Length: 270
Image 1 (cartoon, helix red, strand yellow):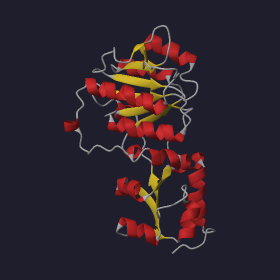
Image 2: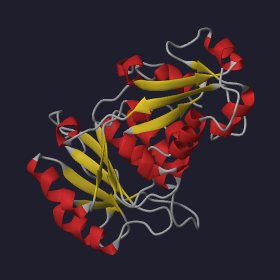
Image 3: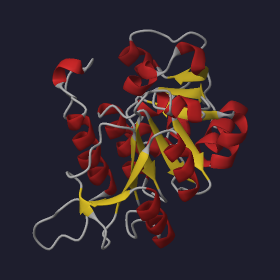
Image 4: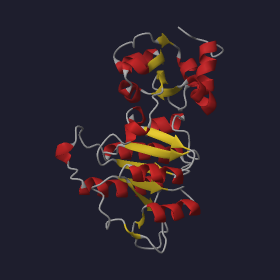
Protein backbone atom coordinates (compact mmCIF):
# COMPACT_ATOMS: atom_id res chain seq x y z
CA UNK A 1 0.00 0.00 0.00
CA UNK A 2 1.22 3.52 -0.84
CA UNK A 3 1.05 5.64 2.31
CA UNK A 4 3.29 8.61 1.50
CA UNK A 5 2.36 11.62 -0.62
CA UNK A 6 6.07 11.89 -1.42
CA UNK A 7 5.90 8.65 -3.40
CA UNK A 8 7.09 9.19 -7.00
CA UNK A 9 3.95 7.65 -8.48
CA UNK A 10 1.80 9.98 -6.42
CA UNK A 11 3.82 13.00 -7.52
CA UNK A 12 3.47 11.93 -11.14
CA UNK A 13 -0.30 11.60 -10.88
CA UNK A 14 -0.54 15.09 -9.37
CA UNK A 15 1.51 16.50 -12.25
CA UNK A 16 -0.70 14.77 -14.79
CA UNK A 17 -3.76 16.13 -13.02
CA UNK A 18 -2.51 19.70 -13.21
CA UNK A 19 -0.51 19.88 -16.45
CA UNK A 20 -2.24 19.61 -19.82
CA UNK A 21 1.04 19.51 -21.71
CA UNK A 22 2.26 16.50 -19.71
CA UNK A 23 -1.04 14.67 -20.29
CA UNK A 24 -0.67 15.31 -24.00
CA UNK A 25 2.96 14.19 -24.10
CA UNK A 26 2.17 10.93 -22.34
CA UNK A 27 -1.15 10.34 -24.11
CA UNK A 28 -3.11 9.78 -20.90
CA UNK A 29 -5.69 11.41 -18.66
CA UNK A 30 -7.22 10.83 -15.23
CA UNK A 31 -10.58 9.24 -14.53
CA UNK A 32 -11.95 9.45 -11.03
CA UNK A 33 -14.95 7.98 -9.26
CA UNK A 34 -16.70 4.61 -9.27
CA UNK A 35 -19.28 5.30 -11.96
CA UNK A 36 -16.84 6.81 -14.44
CA UNK A 37 -14.21 4.15 -13.78
CA UNK A 38 -16.75 1.45 -14.68
CA UNK A 39 -17.16 3.12 -18.08
CA UNK A 40 -13.48 2.76 -19.01
CA UNK A 41 -12.62 -0.19 -21.29
CA UNK A 42 -10.25 -2.48 -19.43
CA UNK A 43 -7.59 -2.29 -22.15
CA UNK A 44 -7.34 1.49 -21.80
CA UNK A 45 -6.48 1.49 -18.09
CA UNK A 46 -2.77 2.21 -17.69
CA UNK A 47 -2.69 2.51 -13.89
CA UNK A 48 -5.29 2.27 -11.14
CA UNK A 49 -5.28 3.39 -7.52
CA UNK A 50 -7.91 2.49 -4.93
CA UNK A 51 -8.54 2.92 -1.24
CA UNK A 52 -10.29 0.39 0.98
CA UNK A 53 -13.44 2.47 0.68
CA UNK A 54 -13.09 2.48 -3.11
CA UNK A 55 -12.88 -1.31 -3.13
CA UNK A 56 -16.05 -1.46 -1.04
CA UNK A 57 -17.88 0.78 -3.50
CA UNK A 58 -16.65 -1.16 -6.53
CA UNK A 59 -17.21 -4.54 -4.98
CA UNK A 60 -13.86 -5.82 -6.23
CA UNK A 61 -10.18 -4.96 -6.54
CA UNK A 62 -9.39 -3.91 -10.14
CA UNK A 63 -6.72 -5.98 -11.84
CA UNK A 64 -3.28 -4.46 -11.31
CA UNK A 65 -4.60 -1.78 -8.95
CA UNK A 66 -2.41 -0.33 -6.22
CA UNK A 67 -3.87 0.27 -2.78
CA UNK A 68 -3.37 3.74 -1.30
CA UNK A 69 -4.53 5.30 1.95
CA UNK A 70 -7.08 8.10 2.18
CA UNK A 71 -4.41 10.80 2.57
CA UNK A 72 -2.66 9.77 -0.63
CA UNK A 73 -5.94 9.56 -2.55
CA UNK A 74 -6.88 13.05 -1.34
CA UNK A 75 -3.52 14.32 -2.62
CA UNK A 76 -4.04 12.82 -6.07
CA UNK A 77 -7.73 13.64 -6.35
CA UNK A 78 -9.26 16.68 -8.03
CA UNK A 79 -12.42 16.62 -5.88
CA UNK A 80 -13.08 17.54 -2.26
CA UNK A 81 -14.58 14.16 -1.36
CA UNK A 82 -12.84 11.37 -3.31
CA UNK A 83 -14.68 8.09 -3.80
CA UNK A 84 -11.43 6.19 -3.55
CA UNK A 85 -11.02 5.14 -7.18
CA UNK A 86 -8.65 6.85 -9.61
CA UNK A 87 -7.28 5.56 -12.92
CA UNK A 88 -4.76 6.70 -15.49
CA UNK A 89 -6.38 6.10 -18.88
CA UNK A 90 -4.86 5.92 -22.35
CA UNK A 91 -6.19 8.46 -24.82
CA UNK A 92 -7.76 7.42 -28.08
CA UNK A 93 -6.80 9.46 -31.12
CA UNK A 94 -9.46 10.22 -33.75
CA UNK A 95 -9.39 11.36 -37.36
CA UNK A 96 -11.87 12.83 -39.83
CA UNK A 97 -12.88 9.33 -40.85
CA UNK A 98 -14.26 8.70 -37.37
CA UNK A 99 -16.49 11.77 -37.55
CA UNK A 100 -17.63 11.39 -41.16
CA UNK A 101 -18.17 7.64 -41.42
CA UNK A 102 -21.97 7.89 -41.47
CA UNK A 103 -23.86 8.91 -44.62
CA UNK A 104 -25.49 12.00 -43.08
CA UNK A 105 -23.38 12.82 -40.02
CA UNK A 106 -24.64 15.01 -37.20
CA UNK A 107 -21.74 17.01 -35.78
CA UNK A 108 -21.20 19.68 -33.16
CA UNK A 109 -18.53 22.37 -33.45
CA UNK A 110 -17.36 24.65 -30.63
CA UNK A 111 -15.19 27.74 -30.85
CA UNK A 112 -13.24 28.97 -27.80
CA UNK A 113 -15.44 27.43 -25.10
CA UNK A 114 -13.63 28.14 -21.84
CA UNK A 115 -15.79 26.74 -19.06
CA UNK A 116 -14.87 23.11 -18.23
CA UNK A 117 -18.37 22.32 -16.97
CA UNK A 118 -19.92 23.68 -20.16
CA UNK A 119 -17.61 21.68 -22.38
CA UNK A 120 -18.18 18.49 -20.44
CA UNK A 121 -21.94 18.97 -20.49
CA UNK A 122 -21.82 19.54 -24.24
CA UNK A 123 -20.07 16.18 -24.69
CA UNK A 124 -22.68 14.47 -22.54
CA UNK A 125 -25.56 16.16 -24.36
CA UNK A 126 -24.07 15.49 -27.79
CA UNK A 127 -23.79 11.78 -27.11
CA UNK A 128 -27.34 11.67 -25.78
CA UNK A 129 -28.66 13.38 -28.93
CA UNK A 130 -26.90 10.95 -31.26
CA UNK A 131 -24.06 13.17 -32.44
CA UNK A 132 -21.39 11.44 -34.54
CA UNK A 133 -18.51 13.64 -33.42
CA UNK A 134 -17.32 16.98 -32.05
CA UNK A 135 -14.92 19.52 -33.55
CA UNK A 136 -13.21 21.92 -31.16
CA UNK A 137 -11.10 24.99 -31.81
CA UNK A 138 -7.66 25.14 -30.24
CA UNK A 139 -8.99 27.90 -27.98
CA UNK A 140 -11.37 25.58 -26.15
CA UNK A 141 -10.73 24.26 -22.66
CA UNK A 142 -8.68 21.05 -22.50
CA UNK A 143 -11.01 18.09 -22.99
CA UNK A 144 -8.86 15.99 -20.66
CA UNK A 145 -8.94 18.46 -17.78
CA UNK A 146 -10.33 16.48 -14.80
CA UNK A 147 -13.43 18.66 -14.39
CA UNK A 148 -14.27 18.32 -18.09
CA UNK A 149 -13.81 14.55 -17.95
CA UNK A 150 -16.15 14.28 -14.94
CA UNK A 151 -18.76 16.51 -16.58
CA UNK A 152 -18.89 14.32 -19.69
CA UNK A 153 -20.20 11.43 -17.58
CA UNK A 154 -18.23 9.00 -19.72
CA UNK A 155 -19.03 10.51 -23.13
CA UNK A 156 -15.38 11.52 -23.61
CA UNK A 157 -14.54 7.81 -23.65
CA UNK A 158 -16.88 7.09 -26.54
CA UNK A 159 -17.57 10.19 -28.65
CA UNK A 160 -15.03 10.96 -31.42
CA UNK A 161 -13.63 14.49 -31.39
CA UNK A 162 -10.99 16.59 -33.11
CA UNK A 163 -9.17 19.73 -32.02
CA UNK A 164 -8.36 22.04 -34.94
CA UNK A 165 -6.36 25.24 -35.34
CA UNK A 166 -9.23 27.17 -36.90
CA UNK A 167 -12.94 26.38 -37.16
CA UNK A 168 -13.47 28.15 -40.55
CA UNK A 169 -10.68 26.05 -42.07
CA UNK A 170 -12.95 23.00 -41.56
CA UNK A 171 -15.84 24.36 -43.61
CA UNK A 172 -14.53 23.24 -46.99
CA UNK A 173 -13.76 19.75 -45.67
CA UNK A 174 -17.29 19.47 -44.32
CA UNK A 175 -18.82 20.77 -47.56
CA UNK A 176 -16.91 18.17 -49.57
CA UNK A 177 -18.49 15.51 -47.37
CA UNK A 178 -22.03 16.82 -47.72
CA UNK A 179 -22.16 18.52 -44.32
CA UNK A 180 -23.77 21.96 -43.97
CA UNK A 181 -22.63 24.25 -41.16
CA UNK A 182 -25.29 25.96 -39.03
CA UNK A 183 -23.75 28.66 -36.86
CA UNK A 184 -25.63 29.94 -33.83
CA UNK A 185 -25.38 33.74 -34.07
CA UNK A 186 -27.49 36.85 -34.47
CA UNK A 187 -26.93 38.57 -37.83
CA UNK A 188 -29.06 40.07 -40.56
CA UNK A 189 -29.06 36.67 -42.26
CA UNK A 190 -30.10 34.61 -39.22
CA UNK A 191 -33.18 32.38 -39.43
CA UNK A 192 -35.07 30.61 -36.61
CA UNK A 193 -33.36 27.30 -35.79
CA UNK A 194 -36.55 25.40 -36.57
CA UNK A 195 -36.56 26.47 -40.25
CA UNK A 196 -33.69 24.45 -41.84
CA UNK A 197 -33.78 20.78 -42.79
CA UNK A 198 -31.31 18.88 -40.62
CA UNK A 199 -31.96 15.41 -42.00
CA UNK A 200 -28.89 15.63 -44.21
CA UNK A 201 -25.30 16.04 -43.02
CA UNK A 202 -25.10 19.00 -40.66
CA UNK A 203 -22.79 20.58 -38.09
CA UNK A 204 -23.97 23.02 -35.43
CA UNK A 205 -21.48 25.68 -34.42
CA UNK A 206 -21.49 27.17 -30.90
CA UNK A 207 -19.32 30.08 -29.76
CA UNK A 208 -17.62 31.33 -26.62
CA UNK A 209 -19.77 31.70 -23.47
CA UNK A 210 -19.31 35.46 -23.21
CA UNK A 211 -18.47 36.65 -26.71
CA UNK A 212 -20.10 34.11 -29.00
CA UNK A 213 -18.45 33.28 -32.30
CA UNK A 214 -15.62 35.34 -33.73
CA UNK A 215 -16.76 37.85 -36.35
CA UNK A 216 -14.60 36.21 -39.02
CA UNK A 217 -16.11 32.82 -38.21
CA UNK A 218 -19.64 34.19 -38.55
CA UNK A 219 -18.78 35.71 -41.93
CA UNK A 220 -17.30 32.44 -43.12
CA UNK A 221 -20.34 30.54 -41.85
CA UNK A 222 -22.72 32.83 -43.73
CA UNK A 223 -20.84 31.99 -46.92
CA UNK A 224 -20.34 28.27 -46.29
CA UNK A 225 -23.61 27.44 -44.58
CA UNK A 226 -26.37 29.16 -42.66
CA UNK A 227 -26.76 31.20 -39.46
CA UNK A 228 -29.53 30.31 -37.03
CA UNK A 229 -30.98 31.82 -33.88
CA UNK A 230 -32.98 30.46 -30.96
CA UNK A 231 -35.86 32.89 -30.34
CA UNK A 232 -36.07 34.08 -26.73
CA UNK A 233 -38.76 35.88 -24.77
CA UNK A 234 -38.15 38.51 -22.10
CA UNK A 235 -34.94 40.48 -21.67
CA UNK A 236 -32.56 37.51 -21.85
CA UNK A 237 -29.73 38.21 -24.28
CA UNK A 238 -28.36 34.71 -24.68
CA UNK A 239 -28.55 31.12 -23.51
CA UNK A 240 -25.85 29.06 -21.86
CA UNK A 241 -23.63 27.43 -24.50
CA UNK A 242 -24.51 23.89 -23.45
CA UNK A 243 -28.22 24.73 -23.35
CA UNK A 244 -28.04 26.20 -26.85
CA UNK A 245 -26.27 23.08 -28.07
CA UNK A 246 -28.97 20.90 -26.52
CA UNK A 247 -31.79 22.85 -28.19
CA UNK A 248 -30.18 22.68 -31.63
CA UNK A 249 -29.09 19.05 -31.42
CA UNK A 250 -32.44 17.77 -30.25
CA UNK A 251 -34.22 19.62 -33.04
CA UNK A 252 -31.97 17.79 -35.50
CA UNK A 253 -32.57 14.53 -33.64
CA UNK A 254 -36.34 15.11 -33.79
CA UNK A 255 -36.22 15.74 -37.53
CA UNK A 256 -34.16 12.58 -37.98
CA UNK A 257 -36.77 10.45 -36.26
CA UNK A 258 -35.15 10.25 -32.84
CA UNK A 259 -37.41 8.51 -30.33
CA UNK A 260 -37.20 6.75 -26.99
CA UNK A 261 -37.75 3.44 -28.76
CA UNK A 262 -34.39 3.86 -30.53
CA UNK A 263 -32.47 4.56 -27.32
CA UNK A 264 -30.38 1.84 -25.75
CA UNK A 265 -30.32 3.46 -22.34
CA UNK A 266 -33.03 4.54 -19.93
CA UNK A 267 -33.77 8.26 -19.66
CA UNK A 268 -31.52 9.97 -17.12
CA UNK A 269 -32.55 13.37 -15.84
CA UNK A 270 -29.50 13.82 -13.58
